[in-house]
Length: 462
Image 1 (cartoon, rainbow, N blue to C red):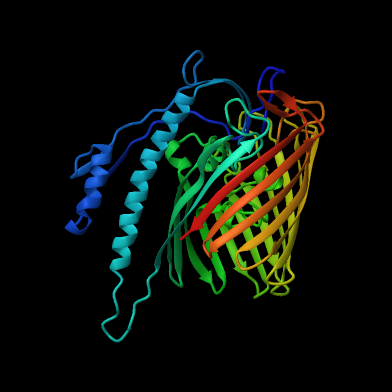
Image 2 (image 1 turned 180 degrees about the vertical axis):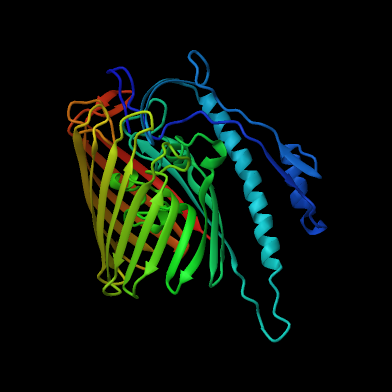
């Protein structure tokens, strides 16, 4: 959610900076000399002993008035929180980011060593296999950007978004490293990440280490075409996904930004036929890793692909979004999208959302809805144009709180240009405009009812 408190204060995004809990990490290393230089780099970087590596307890900023960290007023509503940010310093943010990067580097290095050693251990069968199956796969991606927000947010954190989150700044939007293990009976994925997307979208997670996890799940095949997976999973909701390179337009639609990017729980996937896939989920909640109450949430999805050109998908969610000590706030959410590929040059997609929930300050029911249409046209092998128009209406301020008379009723339009010098690389330029019913875009020139964003990015996957 988003909050404003008085004309002199900024609107602050719902995925705020958050205090982090203490933790420790240790690992034993008994590696052969082939990795000696790499281990020396690891040891010298963190000033650790080579026999037993121990990173001591790390603390980040504590919530307290009149400090160089942060001063918040919190109103807790499960995974959705309303707050006012009174003070924040760049020094505190830099310290927090450095701490995250330090631990991320350590974990990524350990992941790299684990995967490379395991992969090298896969050898050909002595009875005649020419080349062994390699169940391990290592992949990753990098998305860096420069964004200019014409509202000029004072603290540089852009409003109502997790993508291209920082104004007038070159930065990493999302970087991830992923290890996959898959056989015909079992599978697992571990993906670690960092970037300003993580800073914005995972800030409500109380554990700093947990914020670095993009995926951590394992699955077992129950029958032909039926899998049961458990852990931290990609969201089953929506058309657009986390990695910008997989989407037609660099930034995400408002409906994507305000529905889950990830989920934690168990997912049963059944391929009913070569055209129909169904998903059944039991979850901790609406985009949270650590549980916020004793209730579990439910999800369902069905995807129908009648032809190679057309995909139809319906997804829903039901759950209580309030802490145990408060009255329940039951959320009912529905998402539908359709995508059609006319040719190898042109594709079109549309999506709608509708949700209902008890209002945060009463037992009355409120609702929100959203819709978007996008299209992409490939001009040549290396160049493409895409556009998107959308509207998001949360007058009851269930998902996005502006504390303005008409809530969040905002339309947006984007124009995106792509240059692909290689199949796994995109250089993108996007212009995006916003128009709102209320004055909700705060910056150093006051609060306005419209805004403009210019952003360029490099994205690569490997």
